Image (cartoon, rainbow, N blue to C red; front, side, top):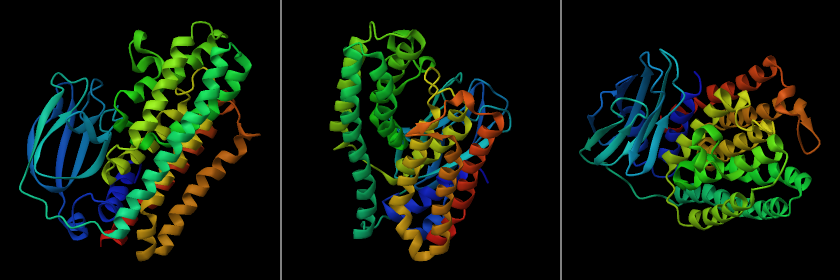
Length: 370
């Protein structure tokens, strides 16, 4: 099994841990399945109906280059998604537990981008236990701690940019970004703050390109801080707004789990290619922070797995350690070697460690909900 298995296990864990909305028996044996084909026309079927409860969403690329992802949305909020299905035959899945209502199936790039998912019936819920509430609280504390650290580190970074101190701004760039990379599993819940803070040049129109990566381009590609005053001031305002926002943002276990899955998939499939930090080549710092963020998502539900299978929980923890060991040869002081120094064999080994982690995680659902 590969990366798609990671979300399935985490959501199964989360269904027990923090309110995915079903009983463990339902999650194990009663999940419905919806299958979609990604085509030039969009996702087929465009619209469909399913009974409320746990639902496995399966998607396969049916020969299109226009549509590479599928999202399930409630209003503007992404509840679950599968990205990077970029080649014919490539498939993936994610799991959500949905209450009755109408949701949007969004497949950007298709001739018909949006369809309707109608969820019928009702979910037999149960009150959250003290342990379940504690599980969610653990991840919320992690999120709040990292957004506070993000502000603390961004303030001196912005000050250096405003002062025109190129060397100091470069030195502070990576430390400022690390807390944001750790909380990326729930970045979709930040709305337009996420692209404002973290978009790459090809993610937005030229007039919207700002945040960390616009400053990164100025520092490394242009060799100057000239013209960065409005960008830097907006970045600082945005991270401060984010710190305020996360205090009241709604956190759902399925959202956190899906984010962890997509983040590790992004690390293995695209971030390891060097496209994230294309000017500074500090990609391995991002890699480590992303893995730490995914590990925090697992840690939030890990104690429940330890109760049923302490051995497997230990193996998963060891796999996270293996990823860190794989990064060790590339450490230099407090950071890492530039991405350009990695060989194809290096990047392949790092990607394999991420996939090995997902393989172990795929064994957990039966132990949690069986």
